[in-house]
Amino acid sequence: MSDKPQDAGPPVQLWTRDGFQGALSVVTRPTYAPDYLSVQGPHAPRRAVLQRLTPDDQDDAEALPTTVATSRQGVKLHVSGRRKPMPYVVRNVEADEIHFIQSGTVRFETDVGCLTAGEGDFVCIPRAVAYRYAPIGDAMRSVIVESPSALKLSPPMPSGMLNVARDVKYAEVDPGMAAGGPTKLVLKTFDAENTVFTMPHDPLALGMRLSESVPVWKLNLASIQVHAYLPEGGPPSSFLSSGTGDILMFNLSARPGGRPPVHINADFDELICYVRGPGVWGGVSEPGTLTCVPKGVIHHGPSEDVPEGYQAWLLETRATMRWTPKALAVSELMETGQYGPHPSVGK
Ligand SMILES: [Fe+2]
Image (cartoon, rainbow, N blue to C red; front, top):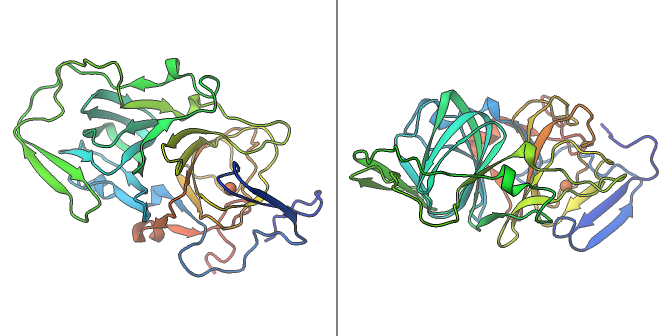
């Protein structure tokens, strides 16, 4: 099962704080550190092909997206697979939301305007902005990240990684939206039970926009430039972060440079969504595969230098994430060399 490079010297291993930005220790070992024989307990590396999960909202239009991971700090991940429009409006009063469109085309109507998102788009809906969405066509899939701390675009430099003027698209007022009739408004809170207002009209109907800034935007993964220190590669740089620095998001698509070192990320869980090929990323080839290496678990990771190209994004979170039973049911233990199923799977 060893994934030790054949032509290298003794394997180097890093321990890093603050996601490669803080304290660092480098040692060599005579062994390939990511190898493990078995593991018991919740803090284990896992992978899941999200297409194997049927979200609650796929067949029940009234349902909310299905939660796949949670944390004590309120950072959450959900999956949505609507075939029909949301018959209600949601306002998340605890967290900002990033909706990543894995497949399909989705129209969002929000408190501040409308936008249509396609495959590969991140859509940002900050805390307390009400919204609903609907597939254009008969299906969609999205992965939703909830962050209690406010999220903002935070590339390393004002230009270079992002072309904000060209690629960030903001919600726009649709003057054709009717005032509508009685509408359910669901306030999402930390409670097990949501709070539901019944409004006399559609709360998303708008007149005109008077402010300059628009808090709801979209940005496509493919328009975020990747960052590498050639020839070695080096750590990626985040394009989005929370105000408290407890969430970082990265474009982890194919890029030139060397393979990551064997390392321990002391402060962040690493969740990677492999979006699509054509290239295969190590042991990951199925679109919509979610991998998770919890903080403090030693890992290597596949080479990102894949000439055929692939698309992926990385969520780093200081919150320790736990898969929900529904996600566990479609997940499997993962080896942390190439991120394939662990050799013990299926035995
Ligand atoms: Fe890592």
